[in-house]
Each structure stands twice: as C-alpha cells, then as structure tokens.
Length: 368
Ligand SMILES: Cc1ncc(COP(=O)(O)O)c(C=O)c1O
Image 1 (tube, helix red, strand yellow):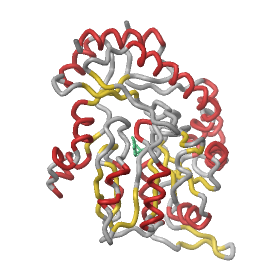
Image 2 (image 1 turned 90 degrees about the vertical axis):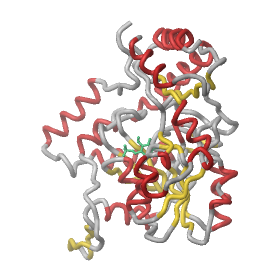
Image 3 (image 1 turned 180 degrees about the vertical axis):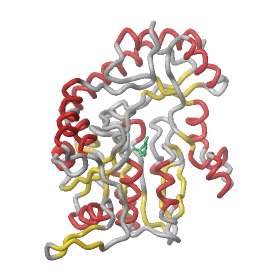
C-alpha cells in the first residue's frame, strides 16, 4: 500500500487551465474571478454578500474589526479549535473566553456559554468543527438574549447545513477557509459572508488598505490591510465549487465505511446530532485514555497511513498558558481530552474505499 496522506486536494486539469488563463491575462489581482467566486459563495450559502480574502484568519480578523471589537471586550470561543479562532481575538486586543466542548460533537457546549457571559462580553465565535454544524440555533438565541454579535467560524464547514440552512448565515458573519485541508482550496484563501450591506462594505474597504471611492475620487478612510485574494487563487477554487456537493456525498460514503469497519472498543466514533449535516473535513475519533495516541500515530505512519491529532485545546497551548495559566484539566476537560487522545483519519476525494478499509483494519489491529 502506497503512503496515504492525511489530506490531499483534488486539483483537476480544468482547474489548472483556469489559473493559466488568469496568469496569461496579466490581471493577477483585480480580474474577474474574485467577484465570480464571491457570487458563487452567495449562491451556495444564500448569503447576500461575500468577500474573498487572503485566508480564513484574515476573514475573522476583519469581522472583529468591522464589529468594533476592541481592548477590554470579551469574546467567547470554544476551547477546542484551530488556534486562529482565538488568536484573532487577541489580535484586536480583546480577551478570548474559552468554553469547553461537547466531547461527542467536538463543537462548543452551548449549555456552558451563558455562565461565561459578563458585562464585557461582546461576541461569540462558535466553530463548526471538523465540518459538522454546531447547535447554532441555540447559540443565536443566547446571543439575542444578551445582545452579542456572532461570527461563525465555518473554516472547515463549507457545505454544512443546520436545519437545511447553510452554516455561516445565522450570525453577523460566516467565515470560511480555502486552505488545502479544506473541501475546496485556493492554496491560501478565505471568504467572509454576511447579510448586512454595511458590514460587507466595511470588509471590502478594510481588505484593500482602507481604500474608498468618494464622488469617484479614491481616498483612504480606514487603517486597512492588504487582505486581498489574488485572481489566480480565486480562479483555482472557483472551478472546484461545482464539485463541492459531489465531494461531500463521496466523503459521506467514506465515513460510512469507517463507521462500519472501525472497532469501537477502544475509540469513540464521531456523532452527528439531529438537524445537522457533516461535511467530513476531518474524520475525528477519540481514543481511550489508556491508549498512547502518539505511539499509535507513529505506528500508523510506519504502515503508510498519514494521521495526526485533530485540533488544539487552545488554552493549553504555550502562548495562552504563558498569558493566562489556565488549569485546562479542570476547566476544559473535554477539549483537553480531544486534543490529547483525538486522531484525525484520512477522508478526501482522492482516497478510495479500499484504502479506508485498509486504514480501519490496520487501526483496529494496532489499537487492540
Ligand atoms: C476552525 C478553523 N478556524 C480558522 C482557521 C484558519 O484558516 P486559515 O488557515 O485559512 O487562515 C482554520 C484553518 O485551519 C480552522 O480550522
């Protein structure tokens, strides 16, 4: 069996040809594909507005700035996610307030959110972790009750639905990443969606150094950034949009094979609650505490299977430990367990059913 990487984007010749067209046109940054991509995100998600940016961290960073989140404010984030979810809060000078996850879904435990709210809380960033929609309806009710903004971190969840509505369209903003480990990829890239014209206008100004045209004259009205997406990146991912749903269906088939083949004596399978759909950005299992996860990762690699841990317990990371010194075992036991005993298994378009069976059999044997 050849080495099976943890992830590999499926880039077709037709995708590459579109990129080559852009490169030949000479319009590398201000061509047509950025707006084509934005339009197709609106079509897919049913959001009114979309802004393509340089990555899925920039999207959340600008969302926080556009909402006026600043020093002294608190923003609720799940204790398990990719570290960017909390870093953007730090980057605007605000304080991330971590809330533990539900160990079955790996999403924020919404029942623990209200007790984390203080008079300084301004926003919640729920994450649709690993491609599974979180309980966004309950979170929106809490946000409404306490007058909080919501930025949905849907970096991994393009195509995921909650009660048939696309994730990212419930909150003030929905943020998507187009990194190669995501369902479709522009290399680096991100898209921020919203139903609020003013917010979107601000994002488009902020991504372009604060540039605004007033009475046809260019001026600079904000301290902005260069968070623009190049046109060849937009072209690369634009041509993958049509295959998204087919790819999610295929990954659901692969997930079904894992569900059938994996021995659950010493590991916990993913759980999909009612009303949610999973897009399987990651197939994430949690091993028993008695299993040495890192040894298992090494042995799986020896058997040509690329695996890794799934996501960080962010408050456990050095930079957060140095600043806040959280007792994560006590405060975020589920996030810590998912970080320390979690295992992300290959699931993507270029992996076959036979390979999933091989991964399952090998894992079952090594995890006996
Ligand atoms: C949950 C989550 N949020 C944010 C990000 C950041 O996205 P990007 O890498 O495009 O900046 C990622 C990327 O891995 C992620 O998984």
